[in-house]
Image 1 (tube, rainbow, N blue to C red):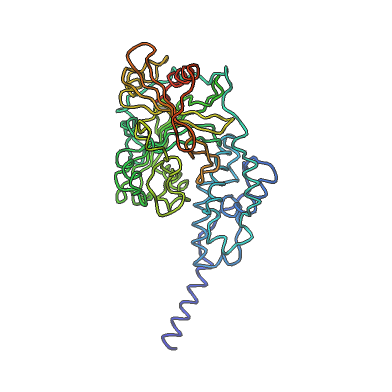
Image 2: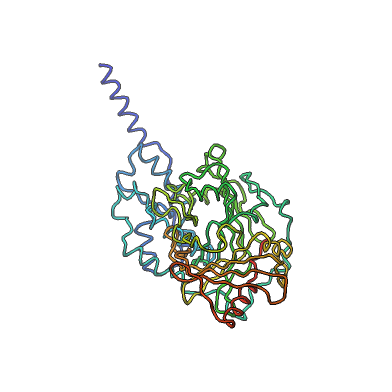
Length: 449
């Protein structure tokens, strides 16, 4: 027998043995299937259950080695991240959150996996099915706490020194300096009724200003600070109870196994690390996988810099007139609010002098007065849907910029307002000037731990 024939026989023998001796893909009945209407479960069953359930569904070609090993790996990985056969054991809010994540994966083209859909075209999610999932989730159908309905009191929560916060199990240390970082963007989340500040350190801010974000440079750090929403007596939605702060730290070589980023989340006023062990990072990287072409960053920073791809930066929100007396986007942010009737969102910025009120006040109420020399700027934008996250809204075109300059004399505060497409200064009457001045001065800085 020739060498070629011997190699052919050996290869054929190994191929047959590989089909007979291989690890299994466990299968069992659902123990706590996701709780959802039949129409929603039908979509999930058709397009997601092949990988994200305890069922074993393989096409004939999926069972042929060596491809079977890759299929098995993908299925076990998918189940560990999201399993619709057991998700029903989680609280309704957690089930809803996981569905929002799934919808975002679908609309960004990350799920079902493109290579999976190429071989299993019947399991593609159609535009009509995606619209059905979005209609079921209806992120803006509920409002936060009504006026007079107080959120759960957390004043007794044990505060912790920022320097004493424990690191995450993956080794990422908490960064106490995040409170001094600049604002890159804000988000209103209708999927969980929260507000978010996305802050960046000096490296991140400079990179955003230059458009040097593809990829973000080493040394970049983000802090995503979240608060529950609270509906005020003024009809506006304001930040309420502090929820958490999440950190992303870019060090491409050090964190090469987690997409070049260190990940961390600290929850509550006691800033308890989120992860029980280092494997929590898989949740972070899995969630950010759909925006890997944007260096795994969801945020569109508010900047006038131009990028070479669409939907990477938010130029519209940065289009403030050069004739404004101050540049508020370069200041630190104090709080934000949203008008649910007009779909406008506003952020209150303060110069370095005004920020002292937060440093003196901490989380203590009532708010201390701003010192003389403070300048506050309330920038109001129209809102638009976040292109990267279904259920999120971000700033769009600026509509108004209001300034209050604090003077030492009683009643000597100066109010100026710039409105319209080109932000031209207008001159309201004394009554409106006094009303808007009081409104801005009475905006409570969002609480930080």
